[in-house]
Amino acid sequence: MPTFIHRQVEAARSGQLPTVVHKLSSGWVVLAAKQVVKAYCLLLPDPVVPHLNALRGAARAQFLADMAVVGDALLKVTGAVRINYEMLGNLEPALHAHVVPRYRDEPPGLITKPFWFYDWDQAPVFDAKRDGDLIQRIAQELQR
Image (cartoon, rainbow, N blue to C red; front, side, top):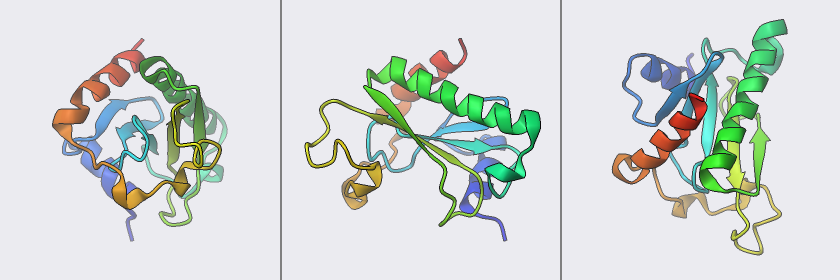
């Protein structure tokens, strides 16, 4: 049965995913639907595979390199102090990388914790009008 990741990639391919930032060699960069922290992105592989270890050789290297390139772009666009990278796949058993900017002005009780500790119910949801400029700036940086 297709996962949420499969559905997201299919929507990106068909131009029906409003959160798409840019297509890289290994997959799609998308802005997360819940902006727990500003500019939180995902890298979705295309084609979708179950996990990183299902990729071999050049495909694996490309996915990991693209993940770092997304982080580089986010550092430049957001002024974040660092980027956190996570690949879990426990809830959605398909490879996807969380690329999460971390900021100096985060709440003191959260600044040193994984971003999963944030209140996701209170996080702003993606808004094309509000987030459109951010998507464009990240996409421009990824095209360099």
